[in-house]
Length: 386
Image (tube, rainbow, N blue to C red):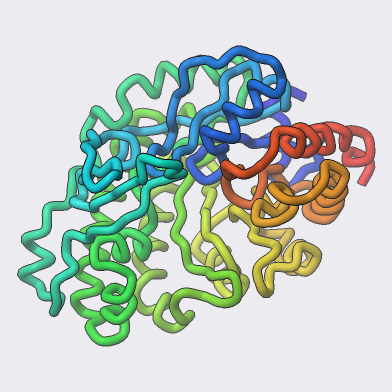
């Protein structure tokens, strides 16, 4: 199978010749710059200029030599976003910047692994219609966001890779939290649903404009379209299902419907961390095809029960190994065992794409990265006979 054939078989619930593999086709399936640099040095390979896919998370896109070594089947298109297009200055021993949304980010100069969000543009209370209407939301359909992406997509299509296109910003709830701050945003949803809806609508319009522009230009070249929103924690959910149904789901459904109409052949990938089990029937109802990162170590997210209950309707993209404990702290043997166990469960009868649970973080030793991919690639014969 070619890489594209393998990925398409997996997302169409067919069993490919080996597990389809993703690395860094999105900003939530990638690798830390520091972990990547250590990996290249461990292999004795030269350092090369880096392409950063998400500067806030300090995530990079591996070079072709690494992608080929690990049998990666995907390639990602990265529009210009507020996580890639900014200028830092130094303030209080930190690299600091304000992005196009007015979010303030900072990263310590000494040993800073990523940027944290410390300033919110609409942190003042109470939330009001005037405050929302006067807030500057950047244009989602600026042509510069997708400049050069069609040529890149066509090149990868010729090379028989599966092409993934990501969103221009985080999810509706996550962006609301960034605009207002966590405490304000979660309180607003309960105490002021009307103005919460107004703010969510402004974010939604940004997204709709982006996807209309991007998929009009690129829709015929992409196989997977990536959206997301973080609804889960390690143990429960950030908001109740009732609140989500009232304020998030109608807008999310409209967004999914719009994407589907613009690129009917593409599969819709949705990233949401943590325990999202009770949301999964609703995701299926909205037309989501793929969930990520498949946070199998969170409460309620046991891989076997997920596969049994939702495996016919959802593709699992991720969940291959735990990035909180096993991958950074386990032995190479423990990593390989967990990888093979999760592939056997989640990959049965297709509907699975291998990736870690979220990005490979800076504390992961290169030996464990190598053990992980060696275990995946050993699954050729057993996987095809499941």
